[in-house]
Image (cartoon, rainbow, N blue to C red):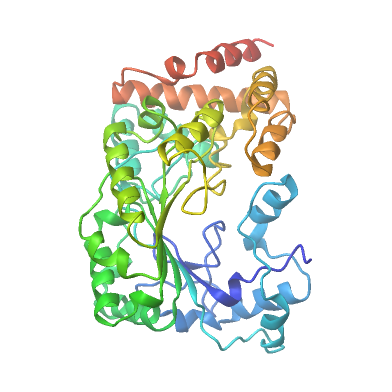
Length: 422
């Protein structure tokens, strides 16, 4: 099986929260226009405009010839680590056979990931302005208190916060009426499987407008839709549309049990999350729907991993199954201060010993095994730990929260202090 090929450039459309077209959600590379300078944008270009652009044809040619594509580095890394990645080789031979030598492929994609916006109501620890305008607004407010701290965050870049320069700005590509309708038309005619993400899509009126359009054009019955949500804004309007779909699935962004997820996904409330989960659970039991728990596994919750899985099993009735599932795809690699590999070696080894007593699946075993590896040298770990402390201590003080990361993860705090003194 090819370690390079992925079918996404043939079967998949992806719109980033800022409106830029990309190969998929794991890459940071925008699809450039034929001038090799500007980027294709959903508020200025249709899907058809970018589909057989020079860049897309080059990507297909590279994959057909076994040449690595820079857009795909994250999946290559995850594959090598034995962690689940999005790379998909299904239909490879047929797709290649139907592709011209120059990379032109004239069939439309039937699968889409639509990140409607960066508008969100949460300021998650691992998030950034790119996916939450509230995160950007908070950084600006903290910068008023300490301009020096905000400059440090910018200089740190992907170490502490995946920095963008448009702090606090809302990304709303769908406000162009012409291209919004063009997008709805493309989805209605061509897309059978769609993932909808934000920000938090349920906060956006155009999210509901899209469902209404698809319903009026008779498209819902052929579609399977996955909605990624933080479960803070469940809307009863969805009971009108979800049962009409071929199938639907909620990817539930829950990063811990009780106060741990409230801390990571500030300022969410555990009671509201449980209420929303119960809403979708009841709806799934009377229609062709389901829920997949999708935790952003990171340094601040990895010690709860076995407990989180066990809680989820209990919530859904005892066992994880096709209707109520679990995914590893939201494992956090960046910003680096959220990466479990920066934790003290002694802490990771003890944690791996404990987690290995719990049996779940092969990806769980691989993840636990990777905790034992010393992938980051001691000096670099110590540097990132200091950044972790500075960033989270400042954020916790600004938010005035009762339980800080030190209260929630006391063993981690102790071991960081110990490794810092080595």
